[in-house]
Length: 343
Ligand code: F6P
Image (cartoon, rainbow, N blue to C red; front, side, top):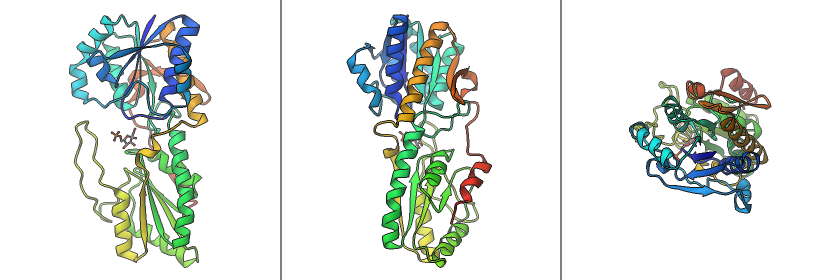
């Protein structure tokens, strides 16, 4: 068999571990060949590819962050218009099956292709952990580890200066990174997109803590967290060319508001892309390797139109049609668990 593979959307620690697992499994178990398309769907739109051989070089990418194939976001309408071109590239390169590795956008395009008869098995990825039909996505554990280490470091400097520290982490629609890093890092408050916050409540919690004699306060803020409309207005950022909301820095704006309302000294740290870069944790390497292995097995069994997914401790196949039907958001019961540790 000739298998095509691509990595689409934002990068994520563990992508290379999936690529390595696909190449090794295809070669060792089935004697198949893997063709890597460069820069996500762009590689198929422009026929830019490379042959991936099961050798020492591929082995060493297990620990490497990023993706050796490159990635790109492609505008969904450009992608839809490009589907005939993508099918042509697959035919020109005699590709028997495609393994796209990506988040919401990539899996949606994978589903379109599958509906038009292309043999596809998807692999979910996102540090945000917001894909509903898998328990966890690789990259999430690494992002939580990076954020937790940052929070650990911020505790000591915040304490020395008796400051309020706001730490902004990724999470556009779902606050999983904030929730987990907040618990693991012993944050005094965590704000997530699922639960609009009231600035008065944030200020009251800070004042209570300082009144008890504790002299620092750490609040983890997901980038998609938003105030209740009557509490504070955030600057509008509009929508980007991919249909994503442009964020305007909720933590910085909340910090300014806290200083104005209660006169505490506030500092803001935006972790941004540090959460996505660098080497994957052991957990993410294992999950990514298992996803790659099972996707390759599924391709050879002809189980197309599916996506690999972690269910408990097993890797299952679930229909691509269900992959992006809904986002996995933080349930309020989970947020209530975190908030039991606030203050
Ligand atoms: O992969 C998801 C994500 O990490 C979001 O949390 C973040 O807002 C977004 O990607 C940013 O991606 P980019 O700036 O690369 O488009």
